[in-house]
Amino acid sequence: MPAILQWPEQAEEGGLMGYGPRLSAVFDQCARQVARLLRGAKVADVPVEQPIRFELVINLKTAQMLGVEIPPVVLSRADRTIE
Image (cartoon, rainbow, N blue to C red; front, side, top):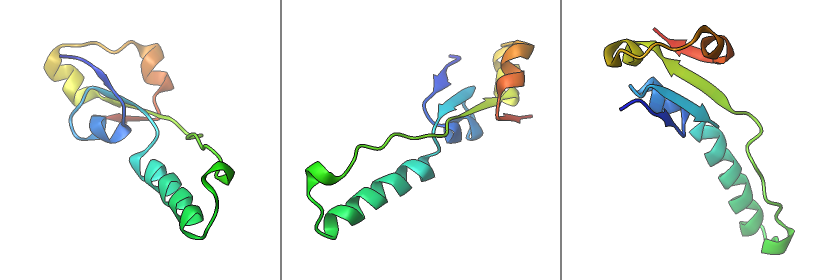
């Protein structure tokens, strides 16, 4: 079933498309926040962070296997295509 997945890495592993932040960036953010808490910061003083970079990865191999045609406009917006 064609689907857009949450993580770009999922498209790199065989999914059709992935749109979102890289898992490594999310883990880095979590580690920074945990480090602040372990250093004694109060929970109320640790700001809520959101990812600032999102990637669109399109797997053309999977699209071809599923018989899905990706419009050229969508392909032009992709950060990475897998052929």
